[in-house]
Length: 588
Image (cartoon, rainbow, N blue to C red; front, side, top):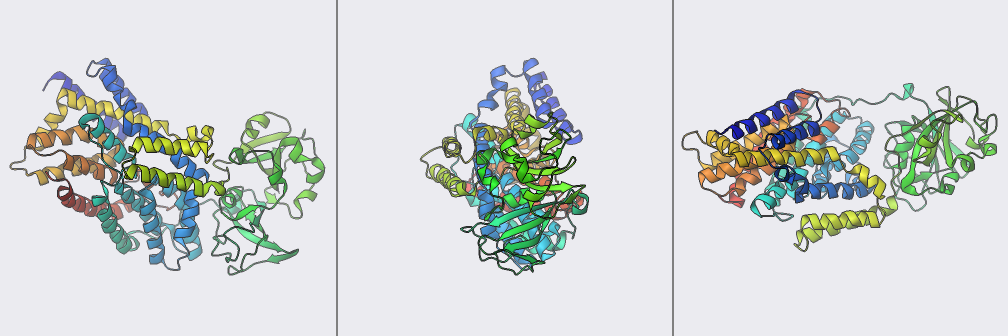
């Protein structure tokens, strides 16, 4: 081998080892590797930076904006509460998790789907007195498998399709992968339905203890035209919130205490919840509830600019020893007090009649710049914003879902390419104000995009120096290796890489090797490329291989061995099914 090929292989091994054995950020590692390839002369700057202009990478970046619109409008929660229903048994609950998660992940980012489903599943588990560990890992696995059904279901598919476009001038259609993906969903879903309960332990998640948190009383009102009118407390999902509990209902001037879970909600009911500050954030995300205080609606702040803030009153606060009503707090600070905690305990009585004292902790709804504006003022001793506390604008949820539907229809019909339809959908989310531009920027995960784009340089170096061809020769040293055996070997290598490093980097590294194997066998490269798509997404055996696996790790109370126990047989079943079906759809 030439020196350039040896250097390239050395860089690849160093990247793999550093990603697997250290905690250095993946984008730092990949950018360092790309820099070395440029400085050493193996790649020209143009070749090294080609990944940053790849259609697949740009499509992923644009889909972040589409996902932002779906999240900010509460569209996924809106769907989830309708599809999940109120199952009474574990098996039915598992089925209600698997089907919607797999179906939704085919058309939107599976990370977003899992993030929005986790609270609903935890609520279920608490209400049914089931361990969340029986439901959350199957949720992640179903979302991963469901994402393989379409080209936009997972970023890996878009990355490999981008490589096909740039290297081979071939582009897959929206549903090209469904011939393999749908059978995988059926096989994998059946396995999870039959064996997840047996193979997963019964554990509780890592949840905050309410007794150790500051306690607030938060009042919300049942919207007259909302979906909760006529539902029982249990069916509305209000019985087992993560951060609070329903204490009282105020109905037509009467106070109902210790209400049973089968109590029906009526229009304009005022519900009093007691719990940690995050309880207010939870309640904001339930469609059909609105703040009980009229002052919230008087705030002259756009919906998407609002957030929840905790503020501790200081000695220079202008309304000391005055009631909330007398202090004119809303007009003075452009903020509304939702609740007050004193010495860690909620204060009973009407909020407007409470006299404010030094050290009182206020739970506020206000503008996002409130923290920066009052952080160093003497009015408050401490000001802290609650993360991700902007209330969803459910009125825009149908609009966001309509934009998503048009994007899928335009790309599936061939009217527009995936990138073109994603660009229009992202623009539609901004124009229709499903998400403001400032927030859309924050949703774009630059570190992920850098990892993907920089890893293209490694793939280019492997092709240019002949390293990929050499690795392919080593793989084919097995005597009389048939194309089917080579396909299985490529699939297995991709799975191993995916479990050790990021799924997208694994796909980019394996692409030139797969093409070289096909060339040396004298067969079509398409079956091998498709195998990479599915293998790079089939990360079930570790919490680190795929982001959704890591997301359910804490809430499900999982250990590393739990992933192996359920993920290893699932990975084997998915692998056998994929390798068996691919040659029938894309012949050698």
